[in-house]
Image (cartoon, rainbow over all chains, first blue to last red; front, side, top):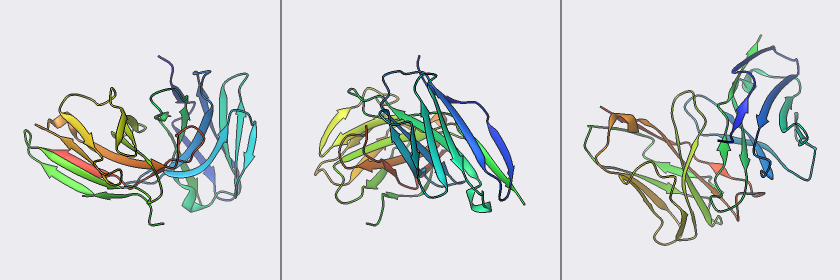
Length: 113
Length: 115
């Protein structure tokens, strides 16, 4: 079935560098996408979202890019800090009756000192 | 705004026992969701409510799972006759309005261990 997935399970970056986490989705009906950060033992924390009528959205140190042509979503984190270490999930909402989010498996971001 | 609150945070139960989890959503949110998350996986959608109406429950894992939101505020998720495969984190989330385009906020989860 259609699902949201991630290209890399683990990403290691140097503190202060920028990081890019990628996500591929296959449901062309999805109209809303969200990035969540999840630290060990905690619930997912909302980072940033984007609707399908946009291709870029910026927040504080984070940028989400949406390429609907190739069904690709990315999260860019600028000047990574130790506190950015976590698992990052992309999620999509395809609307319709279920109204639940479909999550990918996540990327574990490791910040090296 | 105190966020989504879940209770208990941790529960260890013997196989065959019933367990119930409670969720208090963000106060002005009319939509409430339940998800399950196992180690190394993303959260898996189970069910959701709009006010007190349960609008989707086909994703509940079996008929041992049930959820209620009697007054449109807090919700409970009950698992009857627990099995070891039910061990997971159960997440509650809430939003104001439909999930498409309205931010869904998660609680810290309730960990269930079935022994």
